[in-house]
Length: 283
Image (cartoon, rainbow, N blue to C red; front, side, top):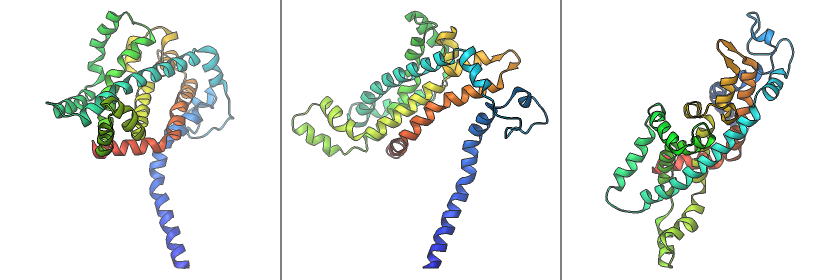
């Protein structure tokens, strides 16, 4: 018995030892960001200071500057509105497209599925020029609605491909029974398939929300007014002035902007992992 307990403890120790490098690699940037946001400016710019911990005392001046001297709360609100709306629109389109490509049979369905995924691989730097003309034509320039309209261009393809894989994990027999009982194809989708595909939907929503929240190129190109900027662009544009970097406030903004994403992923972690792995295996 003692030998088994010793073996189990050794196995657990080795498991945690294998995870340690990954945990360090993943969490170190957040740790460094967090520590830097509480340092004094003198310590930040001193060549004798140790960058990995605080030596001269903790301060909150950088956070106070962020809230009192910038429009950080407005930027966060804009990011939230844009991310929720763009993700919702993209998810609605991706559900219909993914179900069509996964379940319906018509000429070219395989080619359409491949084309959807390939369109996701097109770099955003090649798309923002034609999209800027679309935004100007719609009269949405320099507003948050310009981002709500353009973000689905890169969210829909990946979400569609992901949901295609997850819809294929839903047993076809369940749908056939509903169709035999008189349900239409749309009723089958919303009453049978979607409740069974909640992990895939959550995964697609989390992925889309994260992409919108962290997107930089479109937000920088299509919006110039400070009151309409997102958190990522607003913090960068307002706290980097020429060759002057407000490192403490930059790190404070990065810490606070990371909190919503961390909370959402921790809350929906199980759904995210199951949805992503199912889509990867069956897609």
